[in-house]
Image (cartoon, rainbow over all chains, first blue to last red; front, side, top):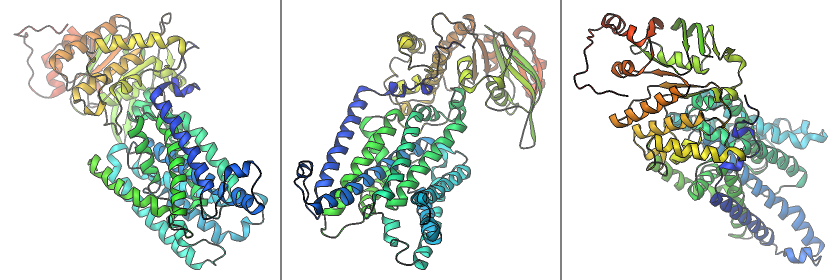
Length: 349
Length: 257
């Protein structure tokens, strides 16, 4: 074979299928993400000004609020949004199923169960090691991997025909995990476990840098691995045999997507709990805006997920000040009618 | 320089699907596989394309065993059109077509590739389809798009001439008469440029009008294979299809090519 010939997805130029319009949209999303972040750092029950901070005019308390509370919180909300958005997009691509959402199909629940198990039953172990901060995200990742693998084998890589079945399996997994988390919450002491509301509705509050840093690393790595798979995910839409004939190592692709989705969802759930419907809505909005090719949908969903989640968390913090709405309440309030609309629209269930 | 299959056997779920099949697809030749439902035609194509691994025997492309050709390299050597599943997302026709662009990202060949794409669009009569959404097309139109995609997949840079192959599973299903003829012309042209062609066909009239060689399959066994003229026997076909078959001259005398 001529050396000049290399399959397009093997080269680094995986953006060659992105249109100018899509690049413009992605830059727009990126800029909204940045401006929402600035807004979210500024507003809250404790007033802050970034300009003052940069000029060194802020007090020590204000500095602490900004660097130790506000900033990690904004970063976590952005990361969670990005990881749920891109994982939703990648799973929808992998299962060739527009309703595959990490929350609906039980992946988030698996991660939450993994994390609670580690916190309640392994509480003494993980505090003793210096790498202990990785244990909770790792347990969550193990939980989410298990669920995705199980789904994959139960639906045998179904594709479009398996939509209903996949959702039913998701209901069952969500129920099982709900029971597990419920029991663990009940038997744990208050100091061990955050409230049940945290795991079922999610929250970005109370996060600290030592917990956040491993999660940043895991999610960044997962996204970096996931995005170059875009072209192969496009080819996969023709069906697995067809993708194989176009040169895609389908087996390898599957495991790459399963592992990276599990890692990013697991890591985000470990710190922020289960936040529903983000992985469903974000990829669909992204597609509605600019097209369905994964070279655009994957990075676009990450950016849009981050932007939306940052602004949603800001709303959750300020709407009933000084109290706070659970973030999952907001995403579900928007997401569930959207879900119904989607079911109505595709009708192929 | 052939696709060569030697004593292929395949078993799926305890059932013998293919039994000791040997065959060749030669450059520039059109070989049609015919036979009743469940004869194993599609399975044979899947073994040849490398999608299914046979239990016995071996497949080689241009004297290289299939297993020692990487998945990526295979995409350059053979392109396949098979029965399709529905597509979940709203890709445009052009998106689907360009999935056959194997090495799109190379800047030096992008122009050649675009020119070739326009040629294929014209050849497959797709000018008015290209900007539509793939899922809004009729079954026949979708097949034409997939056929065009498999043609794009066979594109080679100007100074390369690697032996390649086109494998087609029921390419003409759902097509109207005009587009059947057009697709046949494309396939003929591809063959005369040196590509080896294997087709699964249910329409015996088409198969006999159109192929250089015919392979008759039944219950996973080759009943007979050879030059089309030699294969034109009512007795042979009756044995395979277990029904009465008569061979007549075509009264309307439509020539397909």
